[in-house]
Length: 393
Image (cartoon, rainbow, N blue to C red; front, side, top):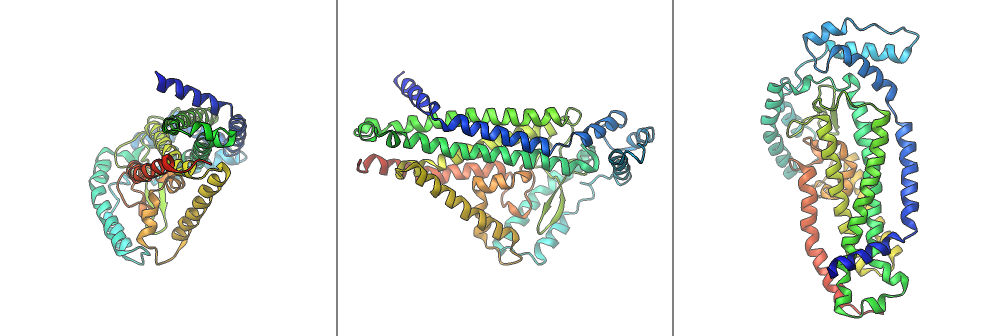
């Protein structure tokens, strides 16, 4: 009962922070601008119109029904171009997973690859594990899903990549800010000497951390609900929600391996992919919030703590870009650095796929955040111990 009462007090303190409504408003405005400006509604509406006639699966029946679709006038350039694109996609449709040759992956892995020998062996092991899933997808004809035809990859990257990355970044920043604000509130209010003068008072950091995570979760729900609510209100996904996300014309690009089919480690619908992506984004945001705890405990000034985190994030981003663009000599440490939530958000278009050369482990989107939590546990333990013993002044 006492724990809940203290938790309510900490939540009430944070809700009085003037920066919260301001940050929410700024995020909502930015999201509206980005979502509306990146809208694919005109293309999607026509693709859905055609799909109502043809059906959602490539094959003989699809080709027959496509012939009954009236060809748009050349004066309606956009629809005319989309129609021709749909026809070309149908003509070139094939069981993409049956034709996928994992031996070619091995060849590319050993030809002019800039990665270390250890990385290469791990990648080879990963693709050996993936072979059985590729065979299963070939038998199930997962690639026959039309999705958004030849526009699948383009639309998928905008909806789940660009918009998803924006929302996850905003939530990650908020988790950092609210965590630092919670842990630094007493110092900012000038009540630190009173609050932390006893061991019991210093245990309030656990309540503060829990309160920050709870408010961060509420912010996450608001941002994702409004962001994707507006996205799907503008871009009609109702007809593709149940289709397989590993559609033939959905693909990912890797700097070394080139264009690859959207190979997921298990069969997923577009709807299932969406909800799973939201869950992984939330998990990464929680890890980001926990990452901010040692800074909030050991650096008294909230702004200095935030600048420290921002500086580390910037250096990590530069190192990430160096490894991504480097033509040769990428060390194993670069691949290991990809376990961080920042790298995961940057690579969110690879979630649930093999991850190409940018990911070492199978199902990295689930394993990497858990690895981060395990690595953070001793850091958090030491930070809390040091905080409980340091001088209050």
